Image 1 (cartoon, rainbow, N blue to C red):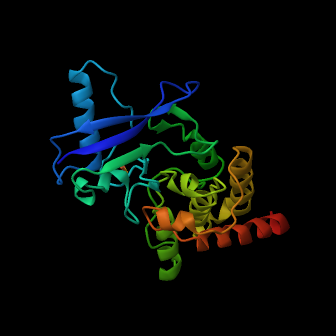
Image 2: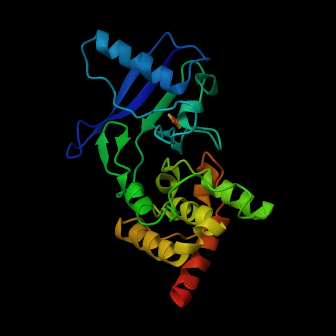
Image 3: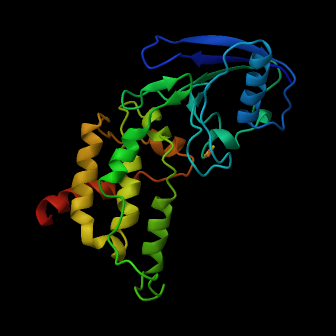
Length: 247
Ligand code: FES
């Protein structure tokens, strides 16, 4: 299998950057997309050229590190899939594949396909935790949680923080990410102690990090590899109002 990769190359945050084309042969349709990039990097090493910088950790859809735009879509052509779960069988022999980093002011490019997503970490630091007494873990059934409540919390907790929602949103909004992190704790009894403080501080941080406002286009939900629902954003907005009254 032979394809042409057109890949964004940028030496560092202050470099202008440009697309560069690479014709790559010797690929198979069973290779993952990241293995195809590995193959290209091996060819670049043999030619004594600089390898393409891209991020990954788990390569199994868990860590959220591998996000890139592929042919204009976050994580490539399929819904609800990370880049590392994408395989070359999704492309045809002779295809041209355009690969770019996330584009958002709050995610500046560090190098090539790697962006700085530490703005997400700073939002999490503001409240994505609960206060609990230290010691042995409490008996799991000591705090009853209705099934529908725990299901909703688990659905929100599935967010892997990849940033596809921000990169896809025309406003570069982080509302889907932030709402998932708030709702998975605020919906549970264990998260109640800090519920109003959590909402106020995480949403405030989201704004000062420069993410845009949500206008409910729903693009984030479509591109989210975990299928996090935009209902979470509506819930977060209701919690913001509640935190202003009771917080
Ligand atoms: S490398 Fe971990 S989600 Fe893709």
